Image (cartoon, rainbow, N blue to C red; front, side, top):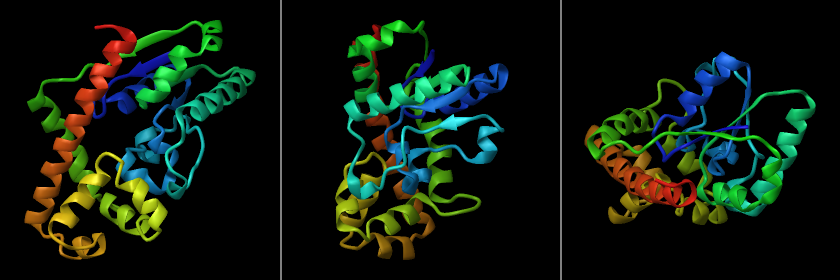
Length: 226
């Protein structure tokens, strides 16, 4: 069981794909937000091209309106998926992700039956983080093909229950905050998304990601040491 951990936007997905190519192992995403296929862009799900023919599994596919997958349930689903892959003699890379799920894994003695190796990606300096995040966020808001992160938010927020959930998710909550501040809906924001508005959204989302990454780094230190 090889575990790749680190705060958001530190290159975990790229590293897991690289290692999967080298070893033929399957990758399991430990990111609970990536369980929402409706949020593929904003949650950072890699495209088929980015996966480079490697195998990647998600714990489930869950409607946003049902809320985030509870960590305890995610841990149980992970047990089932690992057992399934082991029966197929698959090598396994775990990549993520969710701090609450990592805490649940650490607290679950059943995981002690496996041999673990841990690869930890560290939070870079703020300037390095912003530079890397800028590329990622720009691609999310203006992808070469397919819907954008804002398109996803508009589509999902049509459901009031889903909209409430979305307002609590890193990155998406920034879109709502910007729209609320300018007294407009997400649909109106998408329609008037000029270059200056896009620049403002990129800066705000990067700031949201960085603040979240700092919290994740502190949590990882508590779980795995400095």
